[in-house]
Length: 248
Image 1 (cartoon, rainbow, N blue to C red):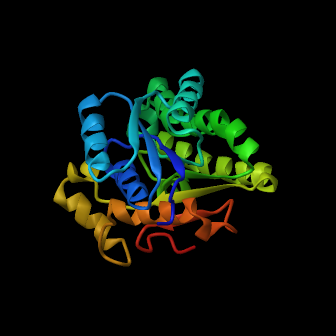
Image 2: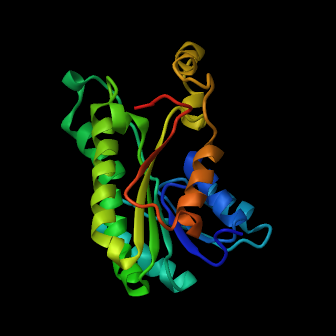
């Protein structure tokens, strides 16, 4: 197992891509702490699912964008599991509209949840990783952060900010054997995309060279690789999981 004995924090893991990452980490032998904001029922169901075959997992209700809560989360995870080896900053939201209609609150909320959360949790875990002189930080961005998208100025800005943050963290911490990479998913079929009309979905598929959407497992598999020693010489990179949407 690629992550045997490692302790991972995954934010926003009660559904979608985050849930798939938690499932795959457990399969690979990691101990998993995951966060959720409101759905206690889904969180407890995920705990039960992942622990059914002996996996060590615990859900924590936490607002990833709040520094105080990020610090408490890290403290609670260390108390429960002893350390933190891996962080996956996955928590994210959308609140789409054209820029001329976008409110300040829509801008601030998306930036806080998507970008500030990466800062808060990464900063909160640094003391532990620096002491261990080891760690893997994985930030979930988006192809929209690479190329932009009309009607998503706030989301695109937050996801582009993650890419710059990732490179800076990699440069700062590489000498301490702490790696930081970003994943940029494309059109991944989740509960969120299931709500889209078929015409919109087909339009996405037609624009993808592989002519299909991705699965959450496609992102989770890359997460396992970046969290494991198999990627020990990879840091500061953005890897697209997009079926070829972005080729340059």
